[in-house]
Image (cartoon, helix red, strand yellow):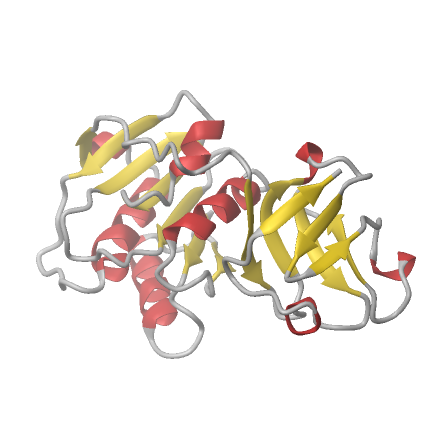
Length: 243
């Protein structure tokens, strides 16, 4: 399958145009929209989400990953193979955590170019055709050449104590893996200190808490409420783990 992981949104033509290219180039291959509303133009939070959610998909999955504020610039267009899955997208940190956790990985720089390519929509014109061809069984070597490793972002920790994403319910996903935070810990966020609970019904209505979500990330929620509004949380809000 091909998995879409982008900040394109569902409004406007972008996701639709990319999907159309995938359908034309790889007819019959399932296309799954995982995220279309990643934090716009922010590869760093997206990198932690990609590492958490990619592991849910089987070996052989092709991820079309586009959070690309430098589109048209000097960043390399890459194919990465890590833990048996392929990732297609820009070399801007988006694959940092996936590559770090799945080492060793193999990288290729995309050399193929379409007959016409816009300066501002490489997701549609370059990355989508490459992802479709990979999903159709072509090897990376048919479109790309071996590439040197990405420059490691040593200032990006293994676990990021920040809010990465707000879902439609107002729950706040963090960059902390649940198995790295003891259940006895409290989290400080937005001026509030939160204890752990297993699930929403374990706390009174209107109460904030943290729990480990279904994909292994620490998530902050409010029972029967929106954590982003009640606790004043947003993308990039810093957290502190308290003993």
